[in-house]
Image (cartoon, rainbow, N blue to C red; front, side):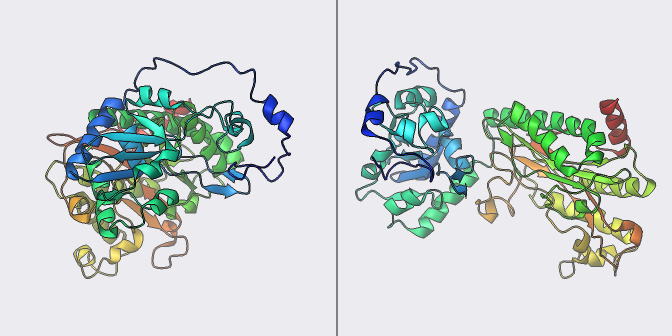
Length: 470
């Protein structure tokens, strides 16, 4: 018996009619009744209401997305689109949220298949005996406090002449169901979905605080693991942090950067396969993702020996002073880019003091120059939340060229990166990278440092590492 709708493997055995019939009998009823609503459910309802108010009289469609292939017969572990989870609290694959013009919302889900359908034992992607139990529609309705219907019915729900906006590029199947929507309107819809998430509610802030706490413990784990890493490689430290992220959260929120020695000069080093040597610096940029999918994003520079050399200390402190200058700019109403400019001013003057600039710091900082950026290429921070670079689809005037607001959570992370083959700098600088990255909540009058459980100054880093490893 073959079923083209089932997701089977290349080496699966045929199923006889007798086996198919036998698999349908003798199963107990295991549906859960009277489930409490998830803690996030009322927050998600308020978010859907805000979204509806932005587009009154229109149908709004936000898909979760589906599985993506990693290799033959293997998919990546599923993670839903952040806007979908923000609006529903759901994390299952293939879901589609539909908000009708009157504001009523329905969540279309792929539910648990009953034991009369061969999917449960034959489908490697969705079958319960292969992939685990999915909630029934009734269970999802109770847990999410949101009406649910089978995802097979979504096509019928999207017919008619109702003005519709859809979050494109998430689910090809949903895109195909709505070929005639206005691309400009859909792009605006994606931007608004991102902009609504710029200011975090109280529940989200608590999730981010949890992510930072888990990440802090993960950094402590890495310090304890440095002796073993010197006998193995950066991979060992990556695994140590990942273990903490999986133990207390969902996963890492992004590929961990575990960069020892000259690898620290590669801004997004994720191979993590190099040696960890005594006397080198380790740049650790990592964040744990909570089970609600909110992530931290923290960077620290750790001397592998536990002590900075004099040159390492001076460069580290230069980076910290740039970070301090950036923090002083964080308050509601301040331009978002102001903290970056403050950090760059400090770094440019520091580079001038090192004698590496081909001109004065003021000249290097001019808009028509920027030559200091050879050694500090990237921006100094970004929004943080469900995505590590959160709200990336927001329009420039509401984010990068906008103003800070109370409730926003962002990173501050100016850095210096000296490439090992850079002949314009002294040899002793080559092959070092520095970045101190903090997670920040903008408050009504200033900011709160969420990542204050980790040390900032060179002295405090050394004392902390000694205490942790003792």
